[in-house]
Amino acid sequence: MTRQAMRYGAVNLAQGFPDFPAPSEIKLAARRAVAGDVNQYAITWGAKNLRNAIARQMGVWQALTVDPETEITVCCGSTEAMISTLLAVSNPGDEVIIFEPFYENYGPDAVLSGARPRFVKLRPPSDNGGEWTFDERELRRAFAKHTKAIIVNTPNNPTGKVFTRVELELIRDLCTEFDVLAITDEIYEHILYDGTEHISMASLAGMRERTVTINGMSKTYSVTGWRVGWAVAPEKITNAIRKVHDFLTVGAPAPLQEAGAAALELSAGYYAKLAERYRSRRDHLMPALTAAGFKCFRPRGAYYVMTDISAFGFKDDVSFARYLVEEIGVATVPGSSFYNDPRDGALQVRFAFCKKPETLDEAARRLARLRRP
Ligand code: PLP
Image 1: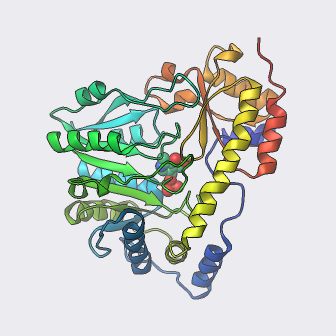
Image 2 (image 1 turned 180 degrees about the horizontal axis):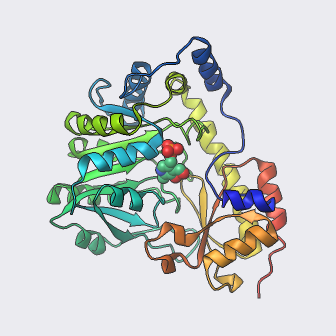
């Protein structure tokens, strides 16, 4: 869709990358690292400064004690952290539970690791102030003899769902009962709205030993192109992840790891401002979408709005998204990209609002041209 957006001169609300600058402090730290000749391979599992900063932050934000020497692997983005983890922990025939709609990589990641993805539905709310929920019995049925892991992405892309403590405890109880690992993707941990709280699965009693926590710089510091992420796991699992990571990529960019260490030193005020700015962008885009005829599912975290497109009378999400990019000049992601069975997303498209106010204004102007039958 990003390529389509470029081809048709559309406003790109498809891919989740910011169109505004990264914090100047961290750009300065990156410049300093390059000027200081941090040019060679960092230690394969991550520069010491960055690992120390990650461990410190997990203590501050989630009261977790993490050993930076034995429990952290820095990777080329959380994307690599996820595939390295799945390759490290799964054997052929294993199953990995994935809530759907899901961030597109999880299904292919499971398959590439020789595991079978098993999907559990997140159901949209019936009213636009409600929450996406899952059925407890359906989740329980998904846990089976061959289940190796469950992937939990909170705050969630694409739904904006923030899993509650009660939901996480339910997942925890099933993981314990069936001896299953939780692999959590927490890269939107600081992008929260409406008083929601981010809870790391690893902080729940009994989960520290069976959780791999994945995070990264991309979203928190608006640097999706820097490719720095990490996996935090107990030593035994970390040893396996480090081996896979070493053979896949050797290491993440060394100077940008040093800048990462500086980023993780930013004050608490930075994170409050980040969330507040995203709330303002969400509240900028959603009324424009509603006025144009979309039904919006209000996100509680992350920077996407999932919408229902039934009002427009298109045969499916892909033809609607194509019309939107070619004729209206706004790029989105068709809902079917987030489901195993494309029919489940045939009446949805996702908008990203990690954009400057003027970009959102321009999108709103264009969307006002949409006509309903
Ligand atoms: N996980 C989720 C849920 C995402 O939405 C994204 C990017 O959109 C990623 C991971 C990719 O993160 P990274 O840039 O750290 O590889």
